[in-house]
Image (cartoon, rainbow, N blue to C red; front, side, top):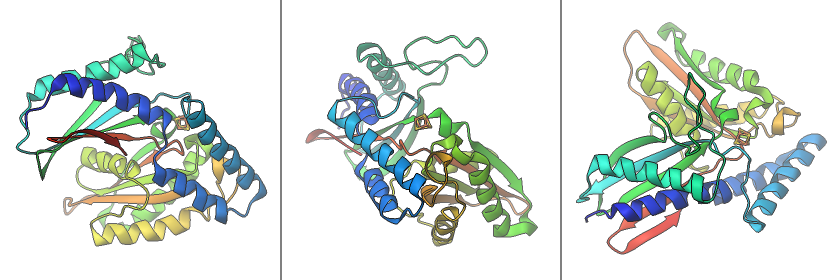
Length: 291
Ligand code: SF4
């Protein structure tokens, strides 16, 4: 299948706007689940306000949160897809810039030294574009994630000692959740990367943080860690917006990679309660939108 880059540009514009306005169903279900189990009066009240915020935003065609985030596009190219890779990246950036100018949206992206804002949500190496490949025939998938800074500012990496084993991983995750407190706009999805190199470990923590609720690590050891840590973080008392309660996190998600015999890297990246994402899928049957 030959990819129509004009259609990609349009879709990437649409994806940014959709992601900012429509919360995925799995996150809404996560809210409903936490709302049922929250025992703290303040926590319950804050959760209620968040749930109301989602309803009002969607009913009034408004943004779920003022933070338009740093734009991330995750591209997965299936078998038989014909596309000029460089032009694909240009089309994604053009769609991102058009969403910002034409909607319009607040551009939250600046040069790291001059702090100049181009008012396009774009800049050097931004939008972040991750490209991967799958064996799905004639399918191009683009997922858009506007990653909020409150959650992104709370990112950590520790090159732990191998002799300290998985206990070092668990302790580090708990320390990070406590350190973040209310700064990550909880309830969060706690993304954990275990293994790899320093950069791969941090990347995996982001992949984990932005996975849909209800999905599980495909490595059984990672899945075991997910279930243990998910139960523990909600006993820390951080609660919605850090104001106390049981609902600190929707879940802890883990991704793993093989590592060096003398390394034990662990990274944590948070996704806030405004866990926004949107997906466009291109097939010979046409373009469809989802999560
Ligand atoms: S961290 Fe999330 S909920 Fe908090 S301000 Fe940023 S985008 Fe909004």
